[in-house]
Length: 142
Image 1 (tube, rainbow, N blue to C red):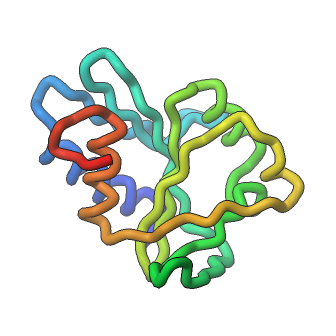
Image 2 (tube, rainbow, N blue to C red; image 1 turned 180 degrees about the vertical axis):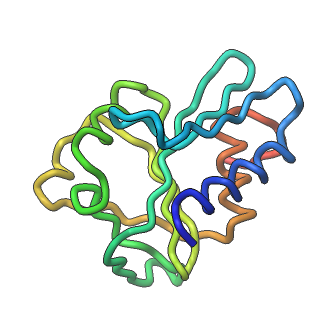
């Protein structure tokens, strides 16, 4: 599955789960400048999401759960990360054959020096519930 197909699947699940007043919009590839793949606007708050399939995924068990070692410097261009930092409420969604993860973007440049993040992997339905929680919709769990 490519990034566009994945984004389409996630945004469709979110549109189904969120009330009609929420806006879920996929940004097209015609836009450049490091803009994320889609956003969710709900009750006056906008959250931005960038979907990525890690190029060379590495996994390890952590507390008996599948965990991805995510290297932002390997899978995101600096322009993408900087834009996500500037947008504040932004997240990177990761998808692999073993599951889906979500990382909150923070203003930390250690990723550029090869640092990695341990990311718990979930089923897609669980990831959608996590997204609902960050957009403050009661259908999600934190």
